[in-house]
Length: 150
Image (cartoon, rainbow, N blue to C red):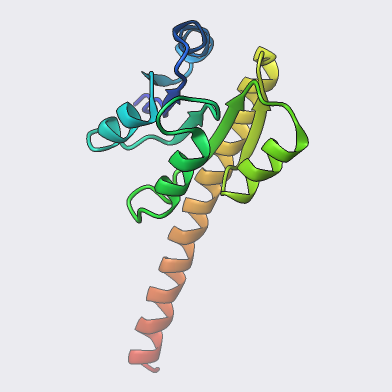
């Protein structure tokens, strides 16, 4: 049985950037392009992504406000967010990471580096899920043996 493709929401207000991201990722991931944070939040009501790639500089809701909203909602707080932004100064990058992004990548992106960083972050999430599952199994086992002493 083939493994289900990971889902990535890409948010950028520039159509050419969305097309470049989609074309870079489409062979490996199920990509959902969104032209705004508003559209991303609408999409999140129907799609549970494995990762969100978020531009910082957008009209209406910028990436910083969007990640604050994501991280304050229990349904979305555990979705890893990678900022993909033309803002390459240290202050912008630190702000994004402080707000909860797992990475901050500068545009224009280098395709092999982008793909590797996505792979790493998705792998970390998968390992965290495995650890949580394993811990639950251990807890259940310990409860069983404490309730049934030999």
